[in-house]
Image 1 (spheres, rainbow, N blue to C red):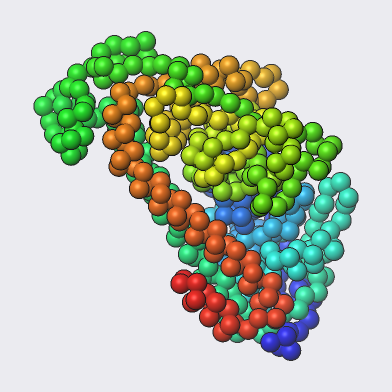
Image 2 (cartoon, rainbow, N blue to C red; image 1 turned 30 degrees about the vertical axis):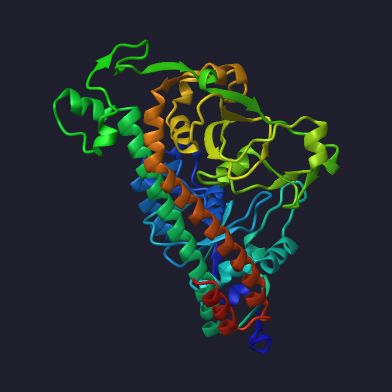
Length: 442
């Protein structure tokens, strides 16, 4: 297949430009989404959550009249900072505009499949190409001219589409798993909210209505409320401090100057940072670094057992994950280990996900943060243990399915990462890649 590749200057096959300047004073709280480089990177990595900036509909119409706006199939490429060169293909996401100077806009493709070009840029080969034309040392950057003059080898359009289709098959399955997991978590959170925040079953019984729950669970709930320091709660329930139910420990970072303590090997102990927590979903599967066993022992780093809920409490307060295996964390992450009853992770995850961390205030004058003492004194609901067991009986299969989907997606990513460089370089034929995917049961 290599013989079908030809070299082109990229500007001969597409239009490459940026946007008109939009000033900070033009940002509003609601309107047309305004995309920054960070948003492009998050979309490229599949971890984008929501837009933070907007411009008015009137300003957008004016800009669109002057320059147009990104459409389905166009490419946005991050162009400033250490993560320059990340790109994604615009989908059916409605109107939006983007920040000039930080993002390069590629459109109007001639004999180029935009999905193929995106996969090329995000491959190791493509990243090396982009890095070779970056300017700056402290602050890396891609210029519009550097991308216009970039010379790349491309197969014919039919092969491009075939390669992109193979890789998109994997991406679509990963996306389906992601959507399934979001829905599964919503179900678990809805049950938790109904039982332990809104107290719907108690209200129903107090009003003589059916709870809609199986009799063995419905019979557990009282039919009345009593006052507490934090408002009405079901009779027989109470509030307590988090330290009454959990042992709270904190992670640690060995001295960075001793690089020997840090590793990239999966044979060492996974070490979780707040950034890793932001890239994970429910379970802490994403980790960028590992600690050696010697480092863990020498610096007395707390090893967090599998099934423990961990919570970030510095800079970004309130990220919640469950450890799928024994792990360690940095000093910005707390670990909540049940003290007495074996409180299931399904309940603990929902409990700490629904806590209002704003109520804790901040113990830092320069950044959002709380300290370990504050974490130990969090006021949390303490229902009788049989309610926690009943909740886990319903929700444990939900969390197990989420973990299964995440592990499957991780395997699919590994397959994609294996196929991508071989397809992009022409080393692997499309039928052979399709056979590998079929044998993987996808």
